[in-house]
Image (cartoon, rainbow, N blue to C red):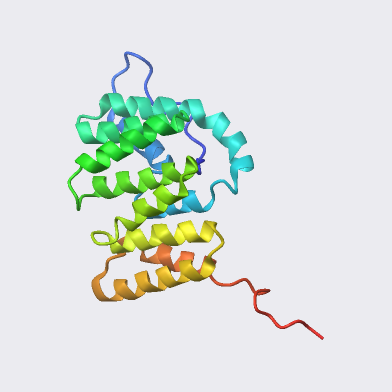
Length: 214
């Protein structure tokens, strides 16, 4: 499913313990490890799913309960109702209830104000869950719908989709467009370096198109 880092043994307090600044910071770091970035983490997650499923299964199984506790605590401590809904949908995803996760991210995307990070983040996550739920058409459409407002993230996500389908030419074209547009308007933001890395991944393999040796 996701790339997980090794989590601290107990980044949350026991029941009844106060939430200190240090504890809250560790919780935030733990949640960052759960893949809450905008484009980069979402795209890399998709690129490696389900190709790395077997290797991740063992690691995910070991960390799943810890991840669920961390997300649950975040839900309980989050004062913003929109952010709380994001984590609730994420919790459903982590528990394997993809239908509930789709409904949660879809509802949040529809309610979040367009142009905000929450709107983008919930939309990207929705596309990811569609992919995990074997709905590629819905996934691609979700990324394409971002084009007008978020051209950089939209192209990156579409490129990742096509890379996983083995369509390197389409992925390269999208990444070239994204990088060229970024030169004009900075639409990739902090994701420019990531787009360049994806572009390198999208290069044809050396064996492709090579003349047979005599």
